[in-house]
Image (cartoon, rainbow, N blue to C red; front, side, top):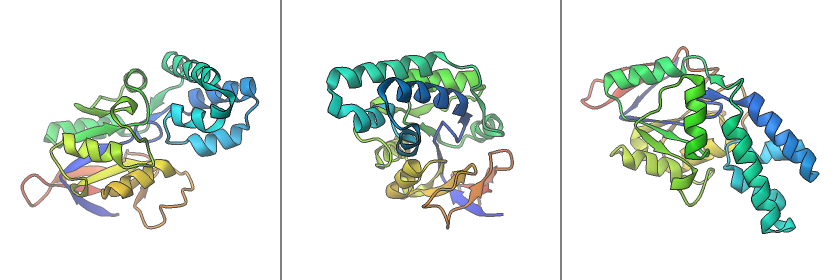
Amino acid sequence: MTTLTARGFLFDMDGTLVDSTAVVEAVWAELAAQYGLDLAELHAFGHGRQSRTTIHHFLADRGADVAAAALRFVDTEEETRLDGVVEIPGAAALLGALREQGAPVALVTSASLPLALARMGAAGVPMPDVIVTAERVEHSKPHPDGYLLGASLLGLAAEDCVGFEDADAGVAAVRSAGAQLVVVGETNLRSTVDAPRVADLSRVRVTAGEAPGTYTLSV
């Protein structure tokens, strides 16, 4: 068991609090078929990144209208297809326990606000009071902007927070921001050899720390 001390907590959404794998794979498979893209390359690049970043990467050379149409398709389908969107085990209980203790918590996601609200609601995971979505940052993951903003909105430095992530882009963002890292899931990430890892959130525990305003995280 690993123990960390923090003043605040920053959570990614997809793959960390919510399992949306079935929906994401179906929507992006349809996009790949429609535009003749390699699905494996789409998933490898897009995991943890904003949809607009991924679509620009693969379709910018086909013109702005094509990229805009592809983004509309992905946004509409992902916001309305919610069957199969479920909680990562332990997510709701952990966020509930943090709320009860008065711990500062922020959601930091590459999803849009409508998509975040839809998926968190479908999975039954309570939404933190502080939400950083794609609309609020200029540079998406792997840039640290979202995590820096999330910590700032909590009134904290990123160094005083723990960031929970499941994707390479998100891991890079947490580390660039200077926050401590906990990796969620079984994905074979390149950059997490030295980080604490949990299969899900069911065994993560948070208690009051020795110093006022601190919390002890056991993973």
